[in-house]
Image 1 (cartoon, rainbow, N blue to C red):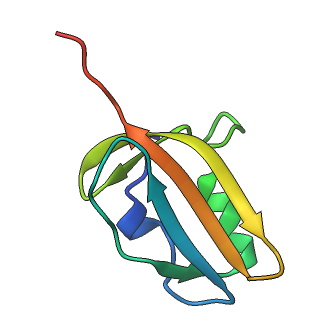
Image 2 (image 1 turned 120 degrees about the vertical axis):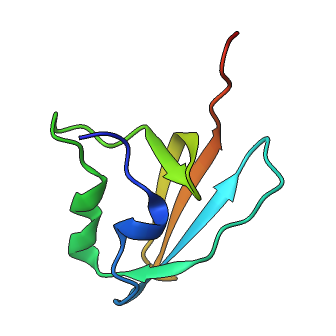
Length: 85
């Protein structure tokens, strides 16, 4: 399976707010909601967390996932994938 599309990944329902913070990119993407078990959607077929994800059909490198249990918040940290020509 290839890298997932953020906008299609989570249910939009649940106790946890999902937020994306970009580095090296000025764009923004909508927050969503997820339930705790949806964290498994971030695990690829090889058993590792996805390290790349699409945001509005643009590929980004994921460099950090963060869970804040006090705030019920899940944050994805991403930066653009730079293509070498």
